[in-house]
Length: 78
Image: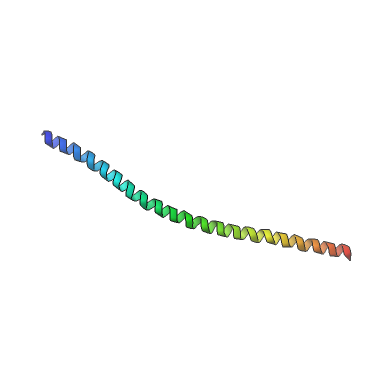
């Protein structure tokens, strides 16, 4: 009876912590790698498209105002 209780308690405790720690470690490795890959991919594309749009907008503004000022200069000149 003593050994039955003892091993019952011991194996419950042991396997509980063993599987808890092992599977938490295992899935943590897996999900950390997955999310690392996912966020790297996501932010690469996000910043790529964002800065692409931003520089298009910036230089188009620049050339538009440059063109507009040159037209105004010509209107004043002639």
